[in-house]
Length: 284
Length: 265
Image (cartoon, rainbow over the protein chains, first blue to last red):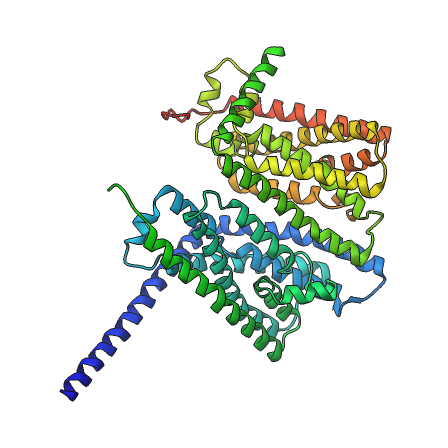
């Protein structure tokens, strides 16, 4: 009996192992398909990345004048070159993140969510895998073009450690951003219009996330508030890590991202289960 | 002229009645957009709290700038809602409807739809102008007149620019990416002080991306009367308006019908 049980449990374990691999393979296929889909239109991909040129040009004018007016080489420990490279990374993350909230809410409103929910994949994981495929290429394009422009303006980028550390943190940034997008998208089950939530979330990222201005330039009280909110760890964390890479900073950014992922991801999971349980689909 | 005006008024009334059918959605978008704009402006409050002024521009100047741009942008894209989606109408052959009726095609197409969120921009712009008056301590009937004139010029240039860019669809087909970039460029540049830019950049902002006519120039005119600036904003509005109408109707000759059955509700 004991050995039978042990055998059954071992068998179940193998089944679980197999299904975990199958699950990973399934979402890997979704990710790969989206990646290949984006790669099929390279001109479109580069075209999308041109927006970063516009933003970098405006930022360069704004901060060149500001540093000049202050007559200082550095503000809050950041030189003009540091600020520009920080803003380049912040914009690259912002412009490449895939906003799924609109897709989510459209699918809820037009009813197509019904077709996706009965497919053999998790609605949330499916969208994340597809979004990641899109974000990865967009991020590459933005980094390439953004770096070229900023290099021409202020000189060479930070060292290799900055690229590696920031690159690793950006993946968790997308995951955290995805959780917020999912929350906004899922709110379509409850409210009719989700655009307002989306705009306000974007503005939180622009301001408290540090896309428009490094949080280091904030007054101390606002800096403390911003660093205790999740938005800073989507944008500011990776961008600041890029210009001032260190293992201690990397550990801190990862810790903050993981804490917020657990909190926001947990909320998404609870809400998702509740709205799916409440969903009533009529027709056929 | 009177008939066309009555026709446009009827379209605007229909758009408003249509929006009122979804009152909660309309109000959510209006208040959401106002909050959205206010949050964006916080950046400038933080910026000027730390750096006081940039090349002669301070926080009050920014309030005037946001007042003119948001009011102009809001009114323009609310009253002529299709100005932001003209390109797909042309590319998908959906201009047939407007061509088959005895009304000016461009005016009819532009005014046939409105955006609820634009009403939020418009309202926010008025609040920003009110705050600018309060903090500058200067107000009078003439300033209100200058504000109205500045906003009208801003609307004329913005809508003309959007029509010009999207009219390229007649020649080069799909311009969705170009339209998106042009839209982002004109809105972003119009919300920054003109004094940040010099030489070639300034020339660009008065010609290829006429953001100066939408933001900085009318905002400076609203703050204090200047005959040269008045002439510039009037000439800018008139030139871009005429150019956009000319280019649109030239392009319309190349329009190909989608021959699709379209249902308008």
